[in-house]
Image (cartoon, rainbow, N blue to C red):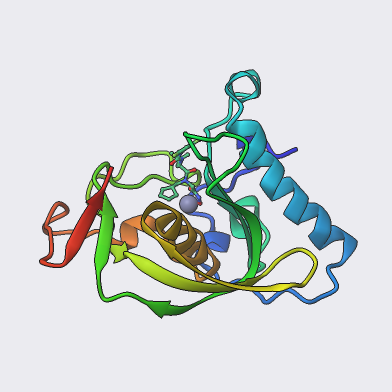
Length: 186
Ligand code: UDB
Ligand code: ZN
């Protein structure tokens, strides 16, 4: 099981590398990695286990964040109304954003990252809606439209696969500047 000590922190070159495509069928190592990436999110979102293992509750974790430069990330967006049915739960492999809405969005609270220990204040402008294509652990192709929060999480994780960190998107001169067509999500 991954613990905070296994999560690579900002400054490690692996976080700035372009991750490699994953081949199917998954090797036993890749299958284990996929399972472990999702396990971290599940365990960290359990209040008791999160405390016990001293984790940060995560909604997404990309392979480069555990030192593996492969195009794979886990995403687990919980559903407050119905905890048994998450809004999005999957390991996304070789993900591609095939289309982006013109409309932009940002979290009012800004973003953080499991690999970044300091707070970096400012809005992180992203696409409000995306069409995401990816393969699951069985190699099945998925294509779906996501909006708002789940779309933000997937964009944050896919950025990791291309060596981008959330603060790269923050306007250095004016971190809280709002653009015309931007919607804010709290
Ligand atoms: C996170 N967690 O996991 F709605 F259970 C952030 C951290 C950096 C604060 C740990 C988060 O947003 N928690 C959260 C939100 C919920 C329900 C819940 C926990 N990430 C993932 C990350 O660093 N992946 O690489 C940062 C998010 C910022 C915007 C999208 C991802
Ligand atoms: Zn991150």
